Length: 299
Image (tube, rainbow, N blue to C red; front, top):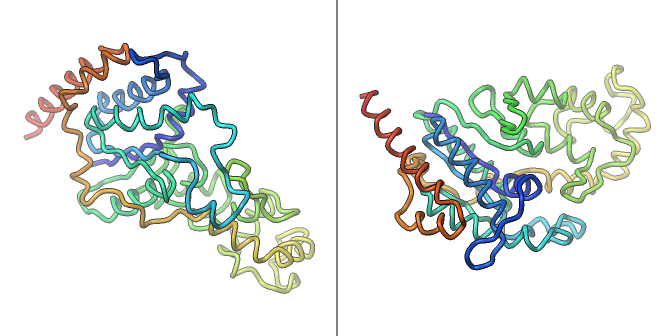
């Protein structure tokens, strides 16, 4: 079986800015929610059987306690934030497993689920559906891969190296020196993508980098300047790496069978009507019938 793990936060943001606004019968904004539901349902219609969706129920997480400048919900439109609980409720009604994160982030849930799924021998491949560069650290060979559904780019381990110049396990170190404006930490002064890739290809983790710049591999340009900057900012670099490292202990599923889609709950029909999208329930029921017929044919 394949396991599909979906970045619900990314999907909600993407649809919020891509689809027209709309309100339900209670006057709540649900345009982006409908967009995400249609997107996830499309995956089911195309054969996805085991699905989990991770969301940031609140934007703030334990990382905000580690670093004052870490990203917050400040500046995020209220009409977007208000759709998170609506989306979580609607996905559950559609029969999809949802992990609404509070202490952790959605990315931690995806990383935890990917790690757990990959350890199950019944799983042929784990597909993490997000373009977020943080999740590149979770890629393992061709067994755990990353899919940018919008651009239809599937990235395995070789793809991560081709894009970033480093192996997946070096992605947290890579982000530590480069910084991540989306997450709110600046990186190490003077380090760019080329320098980070050249250095971390030779020395996969920060601790592997020689303290004396004269011991650096000659292929790395500006070693003296880069070394001075890194070791003058050493504690910051380690902190930024901690921020960039995804946790593998977020609460997700007990067994991959928990992720099997078994169809919508009866009350999903009323939710669809309330959202002005009655077609979604019909599509979900048709997908359930198609899945049942597919399983019968395969027996």
